[in-house]
Amino acid sequence: MHKKVKVFQLLVDNTSGVLSRISGLFSRRGYNIESISAGGTADPRYTRITIVASGDDEILDQIEKQVAKLIDVRDIKVLAPDDSVFRELVLIKVKATAKERQAVISVADIFRAKIVDIAPESLIVELTGTQSKIEAFISLLEGYEILELARTGITGLGRGIGNVTYLEE
Image (cartoon, rainbow, N blue to C red; front, side):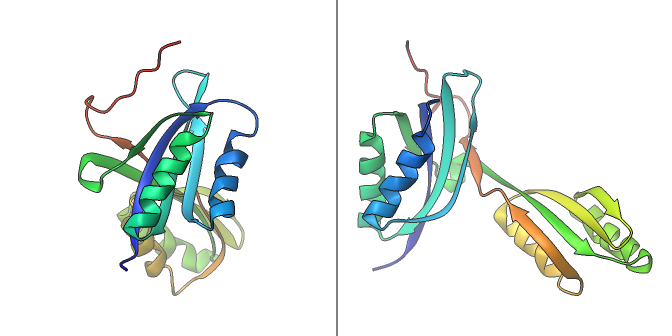
């Protein structure tokens, strides 16, 4: 069996414990979550959750069916890479002396990253982009000591207006 990765976009009721119920389904069934991100939508009654999950075709199909059955889930879509836009945010704290700082800033500039904090012995870089862009940036920092790193996980939307979900009251 071939392991695949799918990106699921859920539109759920903005209720207490919804994220816990969704992640609980994954843990009870032994499904793997590669990343999960959640946030409000234009309508405060709903939350958009993006889940990246891995497994073979049968497992991924089961995930979609099981998640769709949850009471809080209003809509679930699989975001196809060719028809979607995916982004991730990373914050990286790099140990850098005053002499090293400019070199780190130069690498950050190439990737259009932002320096969001500078301390006497470190700086924090913020980068948004595809997973491959973030991985490439991190690999270029291998000559420096990464003190801390925080990634949001993938979030995404389908391209165009064809797959927008409109919920009635």
